Length: 306
Image (cartoon, rainbow, N blue to C red):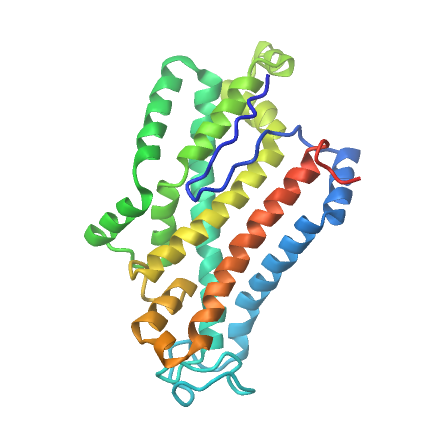
């Protein structure tokens, strides 16, 4: 039987309920057809792509840096400065565009690393079982009960988070346990299927069995898991930046909100300084989770909209 227990990520978001068999040939076309008809998938994808294009393209159309003093201090949004300026005359829109780029980098690297670690441990533990499963499951439980935010704060105090890749590394190292448990449960169920037994009897090595037989049967599940990890990494990075524990050599959305609070933007009425980054984080993470729900409806025929 397939384990349909709902798993919860470190950010409190439910993981996908169950894996779906791989899509190939006509089935891939069917999935694409239903994905294009699903409003959640289309809407979430449009929002993510819009922010991604903005973050990649906008900085190339300016001749000054995001932290340069280029305009009158505390200027409201205008034709010259779309999102106004800070109390130091910095272009808020340019900071916003650069912050989006940093947000996507953290999401991709942090979510990708967490997914790689969690899926590797989950596949190996679920397929091998026995002592290997017990040891890996014990490691997973140890990391799972650690308060990730508190650990990251301690690491910052002793090591320091000096760059976006280092921040993504720390986030990824403490975001994988729920993925490992979910993948382990599904792998444990799939390893007793007939096609896995046939592959094993044919002399295929364990890693090849996992890569060629088990993982493809969980491809859609793994993809949705990465979406959740991406959103979780974005939220964690924004939290660290907001409390002043992120890298200071780049502009990020969380650091923009930190600077706005530090320089009393709320009391001064400079809403254009802190509203855009907060709204962007909410929109990006919300779009990812909405897209995840839509993909669950697409991959699961029972939930699919006809």
